[in-house]
Length: 261
Image 1 (spheres, rainbow, N blue to C red):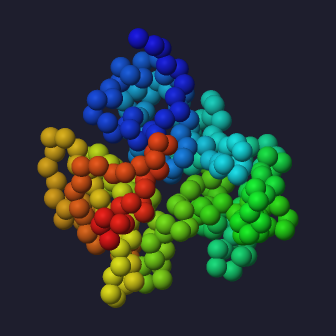
Image 2 (image 1 turned 30 degrees about the vertical axis):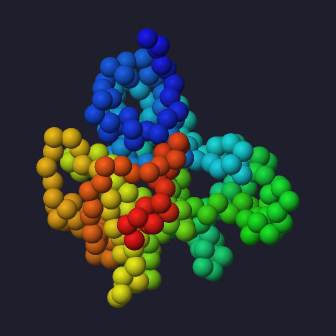
């Protein structure tokens, strides 16, 4: 038996997996989560299992930034668990309208740009990718959509290329997934955009139900519909046994689209 004090692991597994109990957190004091957006409800599931004996934080970065760009620091009170914290020393964040390329006001959503001494200079032997990803003044275009909440920090919405466009309006799969996971009968969920004759695209949910629970697809659709704008409502729910993910916990939406689109 090993005493674990610090964990870097896909956090959804800890909060939702039925075999993970409070005893597993007996010696854990700190959890840092990254790789994919995590909702406050997912973080709270872990804190509840641990009886609030540990600190849970999120961080944000990319391979191109060589380190985390934002984080919530230890021993900070009143943590917003939806957020990835504030910028690290030397890091500048900018939020840009991906359509116009113009900066957006603080608090408004946009593509996240990062500038720091630790950001890469270029892609090796790929000048085209470098030109597409780096601005002339040294900002790295992350391809992630998010906003900055002054009293909490960076909040990630989703990857821009994964946003579902319903009648020209953008729907973030991660937002719908976090709502689905907050339902007591849902163990995990993934949302993809599928073609629609009238709307262009609509959200479709793949859901793993929790053991020993009963829920219908209509119940889950109504649950989400009661919490979102009409254009974000889920068109279809399919129960599945598995959701393909990377080792770091990112949902492989391309694989899901090949099967369920």
